[in-house]
Length: 241
Image 1 (cartoon, helix red, strand yellow):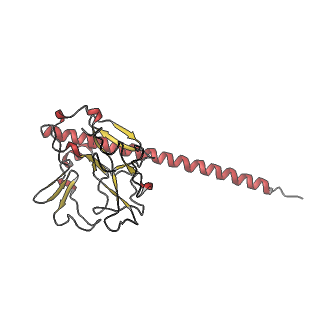
Image 2 (cartoon, rainbow, N blue to C red):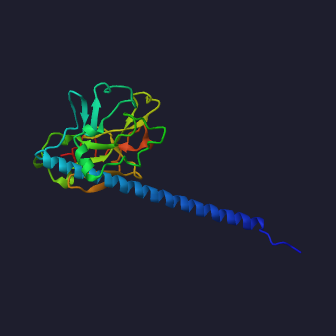
Image 3 (cartoon, rainbow, N blue to C red):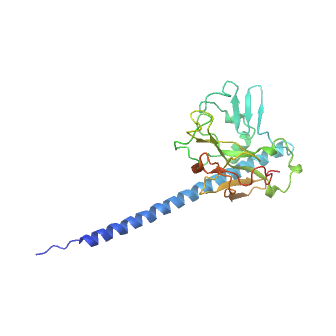
């Protein structure tokens, strides 16, 4: 009596089909994950926008400063860096987020999460403070300005996905460029982080979020895989005021 069995051709065909199905499944999982990260990031930016509107209503429609020196330390828009920590080793600086000008309003709208698409678990990440601390950049040209002195609110950015390529602070170096969270968007630096499938989330003053791709030729070539650049040409004031 002969036993039924797979031929070599049938076995190879079945293996090829399984491999194709596995590839398709992994691709689908990646797309779903990327979509979820984008949505979570966009929602966090909108929450920051709501917190900013609440702040403005309590402060004569005047924007908070990007940073300022106080008796207690350097006050960033996202928290206080005590003087004993300012200028300390990268990754060991302390940050008191509860002292930031937006903190009371962030608590009102439910809190802001760190963008899940930032490469915190990769070897190229260089922390500035102890752990993750935002990864969203503020339009520094808004510091101390009044809303009434700006152009169309739908064309002025407030916050966006942000990062910086670092080659000058250990453990980063010219031979070992690393990526770090960064907190400003302005008209000169390459600080917009295109971390959502070659796109960056940008929040505008009217509350809407747009996806931008890098402006041609602006991606930082010191670490091109990090995908850090600009949404406008260097020197452009578009979307800033």
